[in-house]
Image (cartoon, rainbow, N blue to C red; front, side, top):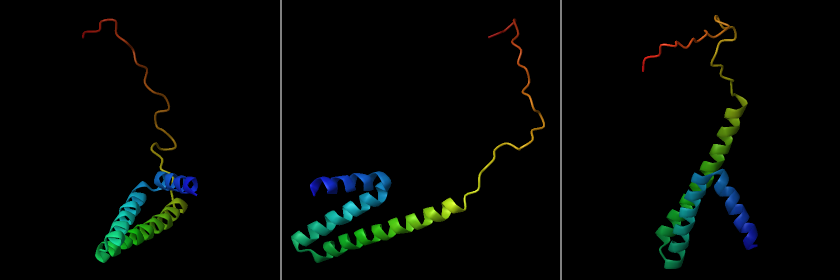
Length: 96
């Protein structure tokens, strides 16, 4: 079970490092608040974890929307007015 949890954590951190960091901070706050008997810290930690999960689903929903409406960008016009580059000549009298 421990190896499976480790694999899930590694995958989550690679995909969404910011959201995973916020979830970790919230989980630590919740554990400290629960063990120490500070219910305000526990609720703050649980709220942070919940908001991070909502933020992750919001990012997933937004990324799917952007991928379907992406338009390719062209940096050069399709027909160039100058089809060839100018020829560069190197002068033998090169002054440094």
